[in-house]
Structures are given as C-alpha cells and as structure tokens.
Length: 169
Image (cartoon, rainbow, N blue to C red):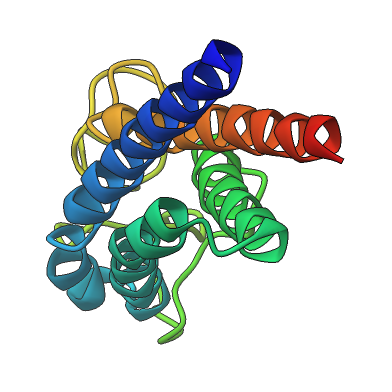
C-alpha cells in the first residue's frame, strides 16, 4: 500500500515539475514574439504560438489526459527544441518569410536591421543578446533547458504511470 502512495506522490511531484518547466519556457517565449515579428514574421509566429501552447500544456499534464496527449506534448516540445538547435547550427535555410534582400556585396542570409550579417557571429538576435558562437552563452539556453527538462520529466512520469497501470492489472 505504501508503494502505491509513494508512486502517487512521485507522479504528482513529476507533474508539478513538468508543468513548471513548460510554463517557464512558454512565458519566456511569448515576449520574444513581438521582437521577432518585425525581424522575421515566421519566427515571431512560432514564438507566439509555441509559447501559448507551452503555457496551455500545464492543463493536460496536471489533469493526466492520457498517453496521446503526453506523446503530443513531448513531440511538440522536442520539435521546438530541435528547430532552435538546427537554426543555431545553420542546418535550416536562412532568410525570412517576407523575402528580404540583403544590401551591398554581403552574402545572402539572416541580416540585422543595421545590415550586419546575423547568425552565429551576431551579438543581437530575435532571442536577445548572444555571446560567442552558436548556443554557448545564448540567452535562449534557459528556454531550451526547460524544454529538455520537460521532455525528461514528462517521459519519466509516463513510464511510472504505465508501470503502475500494468501492476494494477
């Protein structure tokens, strides 16, 4: 009997921890949308919709809506994290949805308002000031860490719930 209570408490703690990580990531994504909309409409919409969905995801986690919702939440969060990392490693094509044309003899790509090439060498981007190359020192790193933590915590919660269900049968 005490093992069942221990698992219930563990599931509850994992639920609250997973909710905390996804809500924090969502709250951090939402204010980035207005800054990104003026620079890259697609990225701004992604931040806004992704942030709202991450905040909303607290409901299915706490209410334990089921395995399908859990898979959707984990997969959706993984897609957001993968999109960020691929954009930092320049694995995605650069440019914006509005078809901006670079000025002068600069190579095509992501440009800041001042005409300075963006990307890994830029100190300022849609997600705020960045330090150094790539993801090291990036201001978005806390968001990505929250997303990775959410995936891990929510996956562990799913495993515990499925084992508990199998044991009760």
